[in-house]
Length: 170
Image: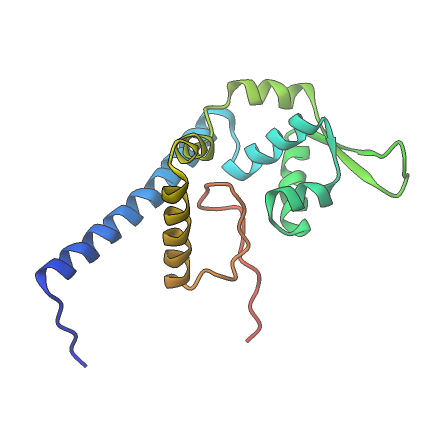
């Protein structure tokens, strides 16, 4: 079946694809700049920020706050431990529980990190009127649905990598 589009519809479609590509490109450029500046992915930076804010946090709480699986958080923490930016320490209250804490080196890395892309977005989003915020969320959710991305594991971290989709049974 041949679909004929009007010039206006074709132009709008192109404009929407260009806007989507700009968003993707901005996340790619930010991730590259972040890696160059401090050697972290955006997701690793967010973990480091959360751990620093809380001083000590369980992996489960970290996963809940980021909106990702514990397996994803475990992989992120493993990479940060390998870089000596965080460490796993036994809980003082429950020996079965492990907490994640930031190291001195991790705090130093945070000080050198550029402003996170999602922080820029949050500031701009909060400046919008309530109706604009609601409209933007609805539109972005619709775009995610159009891309069949409803079931993807995602957090409020603007990144193009590191956070993986759950495996789909075939």
